[in-house]
Amino acid sequence: MMRSICVRKRTARWALTAAPRSMRCVMIKKKTTFRTPRIPETMQAAAIDRFGPPSVLTLHTLPVPEPGPHEVLIALHAAGVGIWDARMRDGAWWPTEDPAFPIVPGTDGAGFIAAKGGRVRRFEIGDRVWAYAYANPKGGFYAEYVAVDADAVGHAPERLDLLKAGAAAVTGLTALQGIDDVLRVRPGKTVLIFGASGAVGTLAVQFAKYRGATVFGTATGRDATLLVRHLGADGVIDARSDDAVERLRSLAPEGLDAVLGLAGSRALDRFLDLVRAGGWVAYPNGVEPEPRPRPSVRIRAYDAAAGPREFARLASAVEEATLRVPVSEVYPLAQAAQAHERLEKGHVLGRIALRIRGGRR
Image (cartoon, rainbow, N blue to C red; front, top):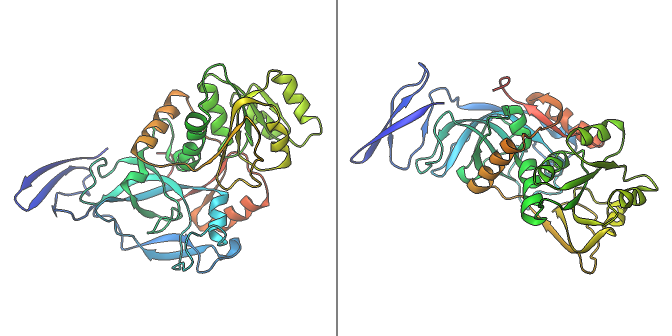
């Protein structure tokens, strides 16, 4: 890791950087940005020039974004691919009415700090990081570089290589905050993860087990069932089977304390009949159809929050729970469209990731 020593001199700040030979000492004026010499003017990015099907996602040469005073520039090694990216690509979830094309999708990823704004103090050049920012104003994570608010960035846990870290930023935050903050899972509780073999569910199973709960998950198919069991679930139910509710009732005869719903369906509603009075149901915004209200059961939708505290909590939980991040398929950046085609074909075990540069770091 590279470290900086700064000495103040009147109106300028001198940064002496201990770094590889290609690095050098640089002078930076207050509130400006300092960079490594290797940052190019342009970068490769998978971007869209209009909303549409996966085929609109093509490789572009774009300017490397300039980080503002409170931002960092990350040299990305990997980015996660999620259904929310597809909904941004086709325009269904784009937050503004007048999009400025080309748009680079991607909500999370991991890499190294390549440059930072003058007001950023938590990071140094070369720090190994992961980040999450939905509809980032300076472009998403399907690119060689991303400039993002430093508060949306955290130090990546050493347990995860950058490919796994890039695939676990938003999904890890979503899983942990659902288990800890909304459902308040504690030892002795009985929890159902509905959609346990997906990108968020595979992590939620592990976090709930780490918190001491009895954990059941839904999964369809042999591979999905084996994966969820391997991650620690006490029981796995095929939600599509006619006797799914009866099977879960036999496994949890006293009912459920909490349910994390990661896919909307009639089957989810049937399982909610097993939640005890005073129990909790949580689901990330975007899950449709939403669970029907029930008397004496608290139901809450939530969004994952990204911030210094949230990333620190996630990194600690990853290390303490010895988290495994299932990545079922990896595509190079130039094949982002194929990654989206695979995403839209049907259920993915764990997550899909883009490898942008480098190997295991």
